[in-house]
Length: 265
Image (cartoon, rainbow, N blue to C red; front, side, top):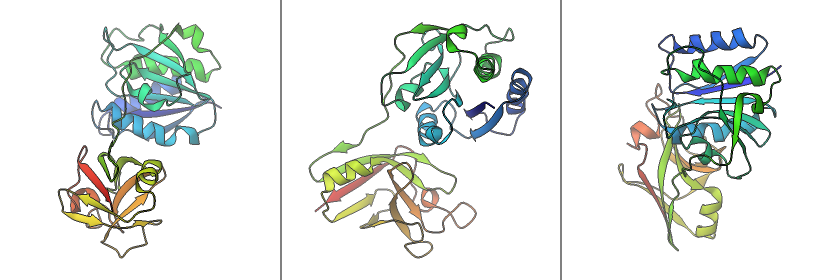
């Protein structure tokens, strides 16, 4: 039984998502559909890439991952199906897949399937679903696409590094309002070399001087720093969440693209 995952910026307030799922079940009745996220910020390929990168490997090989963010077909943004790392990916050639794929050995195909309707305003339902259902039924990408050699390149923002300082930035805020940065565990280790440090949060003037291994390592309501499941530095509030008084996003004033500065002694 094929698995099709969906990452979109559609939200859940309108009929769009139901229309997409209806089209999937019409084209591939036995497929299992998994909603990864429909709350990606509108048109934000960096957030979409982060979400996908954080979870795609946890699915069985052969899973079909569909990404619909900033996906209108243009002269510069083609539609693609890719085979990479044992998985299929379908979406727009807008840079989202180049952020995701650390290895550059993907098989890339430009989608040739026609739009299911005359409108080009809803490619997720009108084109991506057709491709996903073809793959779910055991079809190959060669039938629905033309092999190409490259795709649009974009890069996830990287921290600025000095011998004693890492200047990172906030790249994602999850449902608990935990703030995730682009500072990896390996970068922290390589620059820090085990030295004492301080994590400076510009907006709140909060300073954190130790890492925790659990969100419960500090008292409820206190700020903490932790390397989460994506091995990226997170700033969080213990027992913090939107309905529990707020998390790091609201209580510390941290926003997407804000600077998080780590200084080593």
